[in-house]
Length: 343
Image 1: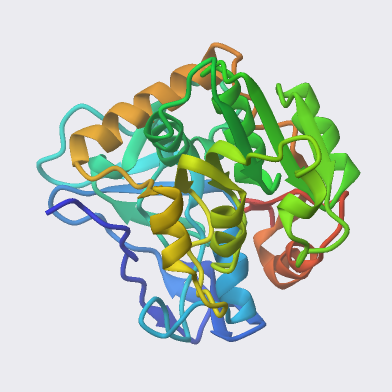
Image 2: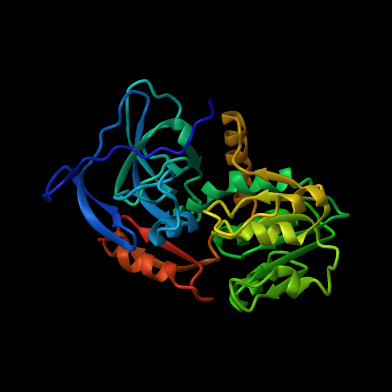
């Protein structure tokens, strides 16, 4: 079985002192607080990471809003998976990685904390001259690279990316390297569309509201729809829009829109258009590792910028304020980073 995202165990305590740490707990929808927990010890085959940076992902925001179904998550819970930090302790039977290594993490949920433990599978060692703040977003690149490959993008195809949040902006940079005929992106905010143009979008369209039908806005220029549609939105209802925007024999790659969809889905339209619909998480562990390597290389080679979209840095002690910022729909709030070392 392919490995799945896991939440490292963390024992909460009601006191502050040696051997304890700060961690964030989402107590209920819209309520996140800072608690105390024991600093974990790495078990057999594990390492402990002293966390420095964790980005607030759109999936974290969905949980904060209560937009995920109970089978996905229940409250209270812990969030945070876009992680960069430093290995500070090695458990038994771990070779290769060592104390002091700078690392990015993947498939670890619940990392809004000062320390987490995980297996080497979840680590990607980073060069020490790469600023750690630029390393946390490497976590999103395996799914993004896989999405671009699944799209079967070529120079004769028009590609639409809906949404230019954090992942959407990284997706635009990666898809641009697949040399589509046209790379079209949509978003609600001018600031994000400006970055998208810098990152290679050939056409950008500002939507009047989050419920707008994409083809109502872009249909005059692209009446036949798009060969490849990659939604990078949170809500599942974006898939209805993606189906409408896809061209005959088109392909939809679901990087986003994995939240609950409350709109009816016209599967006859999927059949009539002969659409392919694909999900993006790698199906084999070896592929996950390969895409992790490729993602880091794109950042190190200067081909993907993971720093420019950071608009706010907030200490872990003020995580509630950080989530309020990230939850706002504003053009000048793109990526909010939690500093887990700042006191």
